[in-house]
Image 1: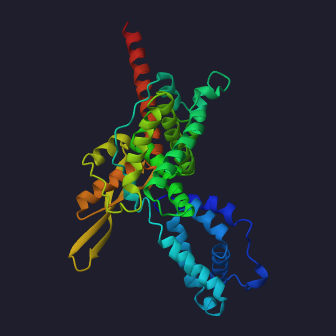
Image 2: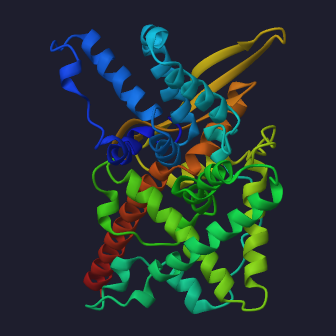
Length: 380
């Protein structure tokens, strides 16, 4: 569930919404067995349709597609014994096909980005526009599309997809277009680009509307898309601000970001940021706020005598209660805690909490300044 898969189910409704169950073929009882039968039939409908499989993989990612296939296979154990050989062979072929496409971002810990240097934007006007939200651009009473990042995002989206296509076409000369498209989707999806934006602390450079801080979790999907859009806008601004070398600069930067996470580089290890816990505290801590690191799992590696610890970072405060921000895995609880903080730093939820803290701090500062002015007036 490292990409917030619960949120993604909303997208999946559009994939399966027009493929409703045939209730006449199911038992009328609302028993647990009936629900298993319904789930089995739904899995069958999805994986007997290559188009639905493609849409599911594109929207939810290959990990979820694999997991859904496994569930369907288990639930259909008896049915498969009497099903047609065509349907069975299709599932076997699909399982093999999915297995051949490695994870581009195999573990949530890899969202804690090892960053190349952020390229600069040569045009100050474009640099400002990248970090101007639509609501800020509307303050003058009317909306001017040139004042927010939206038009830049439109252009940046095309540039990002072009660079990803060029990279994959060159790196994997033997892969068919379908598999290249699957990998490209993982590179350019909002979750990936949004994590880059957060790793570069873009959230500290833009004022988001107060609605982004409401709902305590409901806006997560909106935040992911927003930061993905800002990243694309930044790419476009880098290119537009340097007519001669802008595209080459942006392409080299994106390739550096993507290459360690491509299939064939699964052994890549994100360098440890030993100050991650301090950085996280600076971003979200305040009076009465608690951040706790606790061991979630201990796993012994057979034949090696090693114990891997998984530690989670949790926050209580600012309206959240024992809320999970990120997890890290390492051979010691100390390093695992640091890696949990690294993942937390690129979480949209942390950005949301940080925005609430920033707003609170601004109000406190304003109140103090007003009190100081009032005191000075009285003394004067």
